Image (cartoon, rainbow, N blue to C red; front, side, top):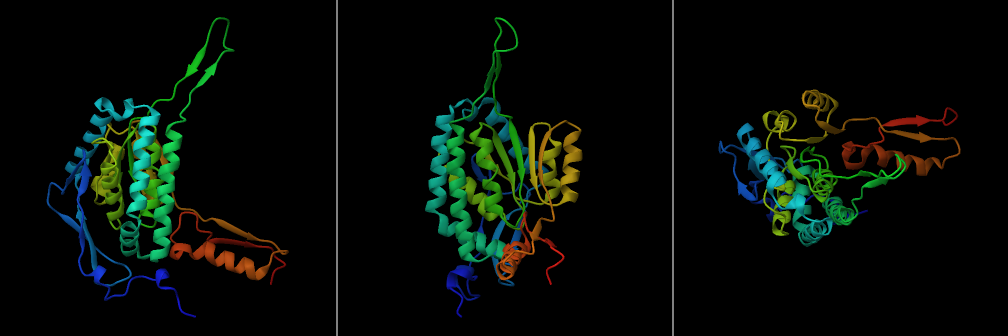
Length: 317
């Protein structure tokens, strides 16, 4: 049985592998290199020796500049002061931009991560839907009222943007995990500094460029490429950052939580796990075997919800 071409990586002699794509960070609405001039070179994991991406190697100075841009955009910029409907309009334009550039994004994701092009394309289109969904939610941010706290008294709960959100994402699903966080933060009126994995930074930069083209104001969405220390760690350390969201290992997540706790900073962590798959005696064993294999090995097993713990009823032999 022949494998459809869309489900494999490009051939080693594919002309699309002939030239590495060069990226710049997006800070304060501008495309910039690292202040040091240093770069990170990425070889495609599916094509040994083929350099497919080059992006800046940020240091503390670059991250501080991005945090400053996000802080200024939140404190004095127009985005947090727009209505939910106005923010929604811009975000829908981002979603449309992702769809328009889905093929280019999918190829970059395929080459950087090493996943099949069909899977990458499906993930990109799913992310466009996430941006569209978040855009709808931006119109529906509601508070609460309480009229049972006493005679002639009315209690109001108002929801306000949290401030500057630092987001650190891993290499296995770079576009999806960023799209599960960035649009929700900016939809609420927050500003964002995204630090993607140093291994798969290209599509995160492309996302910020699409957002800029869609009309997102300068400083609302910043992308800093580089290593976890010093670039990513500063998101937990810098008091100008109000919220930190991290996806990755328990070891790094614990360290970031400890740093953020010194400032009582809000933290969201999605760390490693051992997702269980349970097979009972009355299951269709062949179907269960297929499901178990997919649950364990989807994305080569590099999945936040990988079902890598198998619990089988004792009577099954």
